[in-house]
Length: 250
Image (tube, rainbow, N blue to C red; front, side, top):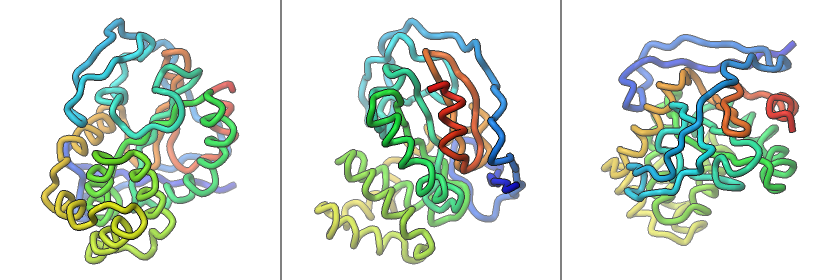
């Protein structure tokens, strides 16, 4: 029976960690439906919340739960309906340099998108949690720089990182990013790289990291699953489509 492994790196809860941090491993059976960690999360009646992401005020659905993974969520990259307006919402904490994330993106995500996201049953939200390799931190800052300009560009750049993960290192990732942004996204790659190097969107990265730490994310990929305004469970590792479908009850 295959096991999936998530890497846990401890450090400053507000900052992406470096490869010098102490690491342990957390393993979960890939064929076992994850244990439900909460079924009675309370909902918030607040309809508006000011978020630091992109410095805007977003209307928050009344069904949004009061859960730490939700903090600052409503300006994050999202596929499908707005979070907590569909039957189910999935918050994914991922790292461009995480090998297990590639397995999820290749084997599971396409089925989620075809069967649940595109049909309007599931809202999928991506949050950054770069803890595996230093180049993933640089890529995360580049992703946020692109997202500030184009959400479709964000998804294209994320796919580029995962599709070509074995080609990147801390020394070449920004050079390759610049070329891709120029040629494939039609944007100014030099500007994107400059913003990544200066960590212009540091607050957004901190916000994601803090939401992950506070919601007990210890490795990537990890997911918080919600249905009807309630937190169902946390799923760790590159699990199958069936695990998610069964957890949601869809």
